[in-house]
Structures are given as C-alpha cells and as structure tokens.
Image (tube, rainbow, N blue to C red; front, side, top):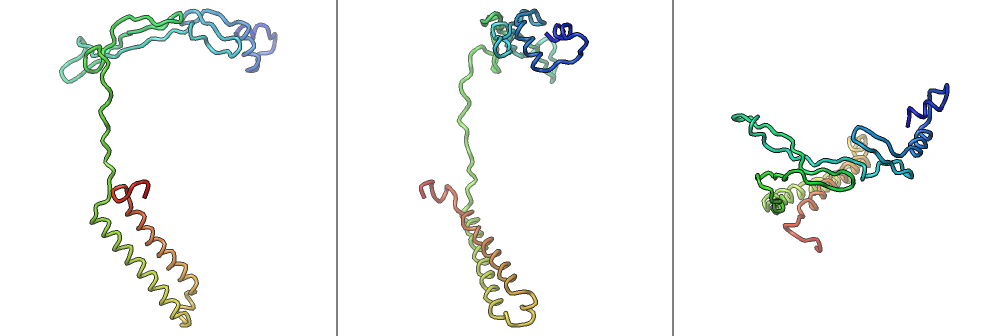
Amino acid sequence: ASCGLLETSGNNHYFSGEELFEALRLNTTFRGASGLIILNPDTGTREPRSALFALTNFVDDKDASTQGNMQFKGVDTNLFQSGRWEALDVYTFNDGTDRIPSDLPILVVNPNYLDSNMKAVGSTLCGIVVALSLGFSYWTYRNSKRGVVRSSQPIFLHVISSGALLMGLSIIPLTIDMGVTDQKG
C-alpha cells in the first residue's frame, strides 16, 4: 500500500498516516510472507481467518541433551490456518504425558501475625513514648517562664512533644491484626 501510494503521489515523497490508512482500505487483500493477508476494510486490522498461528511445544531433545545439560526443541503441535485449528502432533506436558495436569495446589499463606511477646514489647514502648511525651509537655508548660525554655520557644517544644505523642500512639493500631480480631471487629 505504501509503495502504491508513493507511485500515485507524484513528486511528493511524503504521505500522512491517514493517506496510508485509506490506501490500505482500498487494497484489503494481498500476498505476504505468511500467505494471503485479508484486512478488515473498516478497521484496517488483519482478519483472523487469514492469519497463521502455531502452537509450539518445547520438549526435551534427547539427541542433543548431555549429562547435566538439557536441550529443548520446538515441536509445532497445532496450526491455525484458514480460520480453523489443525492438530499436527500430541502436546506433551511437563510430566511427560499428554494428560492435562490438575489445578495448582492450594496456596498456603503465612499471614505473619505478631507474636504476643512482640505485642507486649510494642505496647510497653508505646506507653513509654506516651508517658515521656506528656511528661515533657507538662515540664515545658511548668517551666515556660524560664529563660532557657522561652529561648527554645515553648510552642515549638509542644509541637515536638505532640508529634512524639502521635508517633507513640500509632503503635496501637499496628498491634491489631487478624489474629486478634476479624473484619467485623
């Protein structure tokens, strides 16, 4: 299509994608490397009935395999041509038979629930952080008139203490998992 479009365009050596699409719509059947190619004139896509598909099974090549070195060869087992599948050879599965293997085994999931000792350590650390945060916030309030605390800006010290409090309290939801509760609470 592009060669024919170039011949008809005269001295112009360029054409747009739209012009190429229209040229393809006018010539929807031609011979290609894979045989007869038929394009859908509305969409410009290839019709599946003109496509050539092969199902290739890669199996152990006993002639080329050596001790400790396995070689594979491709065997075409099915061919889709002229709109239908044709069986050429038997498909061999990993177990060496032509029987379709059963489904995969049931997946065993390890939910990684926290051990009760780890929850106790986390809760203890949470309590320490909360107590220190509240304690330092109280200390800042009580000593806000002193020069050292005033130069450190008591509001800023309260903001830092509040941030530490929130960080410590965030440990609590981390100790809750499906081992303790379910989705309904």
